[in-house]
Length: 262
Image (cartoon, rainbow, N blue to C red; front, side, top):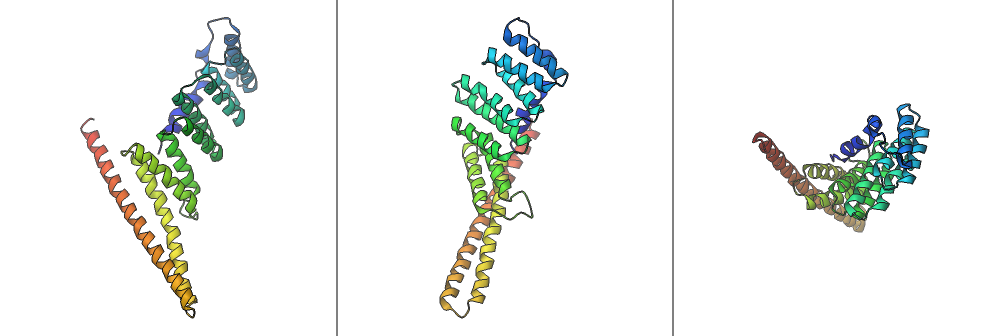
């Protein structure tokens, strides 16, 4: 599972705990409003905090930390859109693609934490515009598509389009990092669910062979569907077997590395 959510959210949400260390040492407007925002936040007055942090950000818009403090205040108020806009603002003041991608990953992490997967998906996709090789964003996009495709539930019906979308993202992660264990594991989960689609196709075609037994042409067409579905199932099962083998190799390698102190 990607570690993005744990790492980025820790950086954002502990801010409210350490606000006492954010006091200003200067008398400029930005520092003054930030100090007022900190004071309001300590009292749990997040509406005032958001206002004061906003005024501080207006005075010094290039200060990324103040935008994050403002975003945190909005989140405390349940104002996710305002929080996202605040987190996004520093992207306007940098031309570094990696920095822009990091900003959108932070926004995506916020939405993930609130289980707003549509918005998280948009933010991760935006991060990829700036860094197409971002493993975290690709992995999470795969996870979102996989979950929506039914791969994370025994009872949900498989969605073939979403499952193949997930597989595509995992393949991109593997191409970037052939040692990414979780990409192989998650791809196997998605493919295993997808096999159910082909098995259902095969079952339906087999039923038609019986139901249309008086029509030779329809029987032949149904039998072709059975044969094709069987071939696809065999192919996917071989790929799943290959993934299992690779997973076993990577786990063994990690275990050996750990034992050797590497």
